[in-house]
Image (cartoon, rainbow, N blue to C red; front, side):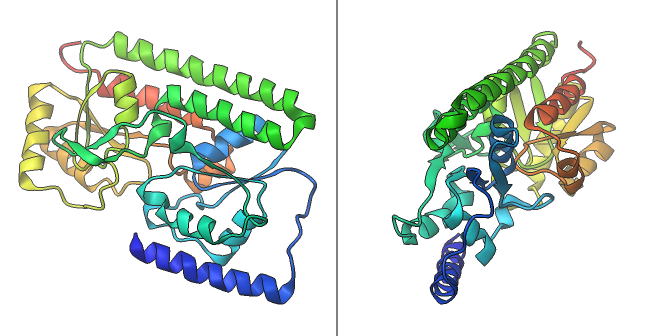
Length: 310
């Protein structure tokens, strides 16, 4: 993460020099420009705007946020934005150095989304609380609704002329989130089992907490590990057999190694669960939304919570 900060500062120096040499880059339209770091906030802003704003996302579809490094063009996008939305937390440490280095006249309105919701302490794989806060706040659908509303408020301040449009669009999208939230609640409430096994990283603490799910995982939320310990694999295998788990979960765009190993050893199926932090190129091209991904998660959850005791 320290290296990311150094790279960001260097890139900012390069970009600043380019601006001084070439003059100011002007916006191509009169629309409000919104730039986000990751997919959930891109989707929320897109749903609030519905074309009234120009909405852009720095994280390229199909990319992993944990390996993201800003390019000079990314820094220019931030500088030229009217509103810049980022998550906060360990994955976004590079943002601070860029924002601190921008002059007041060059700095957009900034929304750090972790400031708008109550944080949870990050948990290790054994459910012990860590010192850091878990940054995957958008996986809670309650949080998602709050963040959609906050984005609508900020965009409305910047573009009073379309305030009514933004308010209506945000309420419509919040209603869609509420509907899929009820569907997930019904899935959980109708299942005797409340335990999920994730053979992968676990950026789903807010989701699991919201729906009162018990969980086991191979790695904690932002872990860069790729091989779990033998003790961890043994515990996951024992849990699958003891609780008669028939379907284990893995994350989107994962290599599936741990999940596939567990599935082979326990004769279980593997299904994809979407953290929604990023999306594939195909899903992005097809305009898949956060709500669409949560609907997929509900279908995966139906299988993951189904066991021989149901």
